[in-house]
Amino acid sequence: MHVIEQNTRNITVRLSNSRWSRLMELENAYRMAKAIVRAKKECEIAPSMSKDEALKFIESL
Image (cartoon, rainbow, N blue to C red; front, side):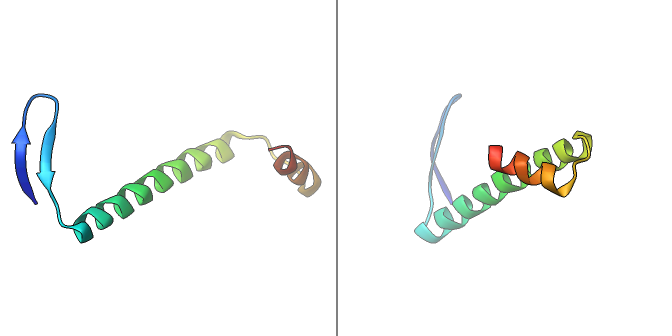
């Protein structure tokens, strides 16, 4: 990675295609993990449901 330009708002860098692809994979994995953590927190505070109630809730989404 090579920094081409840097100012107070932006940084311009040069990356190889493989490094850019890996960076995008990691960013997507981070987003997915963040969503899973949020969903886990919601599950912990949600009221308990029977199997039928859960299926109805899933269908309503």
